Length: 330
Ligand code: SAM
Ligand code: SF4
Ligand code: FES
Image (cartoon, rainbow, N blue to C red; front, side):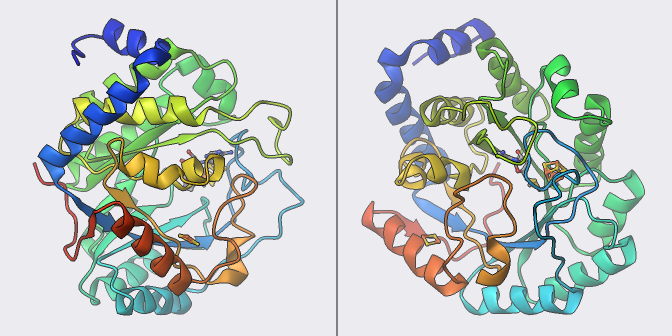
């Protein structure tokens, strides 16, 4: 399968007769470049408080219906310890943009978790160069910050009082500081075009991303986009498969949003280019409240149930669970 230009990407995204061929080619590229191991990352969703108003997201500060929580630093460290005991070699700390966690607090959490001999990923939004540097100096290894869309007009519509240029600045700062950088996009935002999805894929190549997460947009009833349709599972999978073919050796998660739209979504994704899964290691009491979109999977399970569930699924398709840190092997 030849993908040499923007037009090739657009043609593939628009042609649904070649989907199976695309998925099996992406699976082959995955096998040849990153092997059959699946890296599990233990995800701690430590605060659902956010100062931003991204129009698609249930955590946006203007959503007054959502019950808010934040987990204290000592408890975050405890969750990380439990995840390590369960076998996780990477911890991911994700949250809304919550200023309660000062740079000092974050750095203490980071350095304590790093004492557990794990790789540490942050997904805490837009910060200054100085803040990113402090986190890095404290031991953080990786950072997730999706560009969401490279269509500047759509970006502006979806993100009141935010700027596309600052988002790109953040991604560049993270690279400069030596993080492994993860980005990605939402698929199916209202008025998003196939052409702009092709541009998103080219953007990931341009910034030399180490990880790319692709997820369908899922409509949340307590947001301004409540009347919009969900994104398509198939189209998200196609974007992900093309990313694998073009950025051969990066890490690509089978995203939770994919499984929310398709009960076997993560396994299908693992067979179409993905090599990472991020099971939730936050305790059950918080899961319902981290409602970025409705019907999120695993909200009634606990960390050990998720570990058991996903391990069995991975083994059932003949793949193995990695015991390493799972850094980007260039
Ligand atoms: N606040 C940080 C940020 O925005 O980077 C991290 C947490 S945020 C909840 C993580 C990701 O959730 C975002 O990058 C976005 O792509 C995704 N997300 C938010 N609302 C969503 C929705 N309605 N459907 C699918 N994904 C969504
Ligand atoms: Fe906040 Fe992230 Fe949701 Fe935007 S996507 S509202 S920054 S949690
Ligand atoms: Fe959570 Fe399957 S991964 S229940």
